[in-house]
Amino acid sequence: MEMITPNSEKQNSKALEFLNQKALDKAKAAKKVLSPDLEAGFHLLRQVQKSELQLALATLLGKHAEMATGLDSFVNVLGKRLPQRLAIHSSKGLEMITIGDILYLEAAKNYTDIYFIHQNTIKRITASLPLGRYSEHFKQYREFMKVHRSYIVNLMLVDQYLKSDHGLKMRNDKLVPVAKPYRNELENRLETF
Image (cartoon, rainbow, N blue to C red):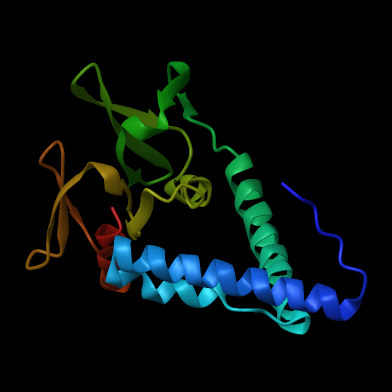
């Protein structure tokens, strides 16, 4: 194969135009052989001005920077792993519960009854903290939601939302009431699970 080294700008331009035309001809021939549906992609083979290319690259780099910033934010959020277990202060001492196993929390005056699944049975622990303290803690978990002043539920363990009864049927067949101010948000969140 012979290497061509044009001497002038005019020769470079003519050589580039010749190569572009050859590539376009071959692409058109290939298009006819392969599929008539490929025409949309062949506009990419046209000759491009340097200014068009520079503008396209600048736009791409700008979009890339925006995407990278968004991706960094997303990775930072993912990097903050939430605890998977909860330490409960009870009359027996400190008990550890896997957060995903909690069905719901129910206010009991200055205490909180926590219902959870343990070895395929529903258990209850009475914690020595009021529901309000747990309410703040569980806001960071997207699967938990306060649905009443006396209840926080695990949306992943809801069997049914009964609109007519304004309640949630939980895995243990308990009907947890849903207060009016929480109904719209609850419906929106249940649709995402």
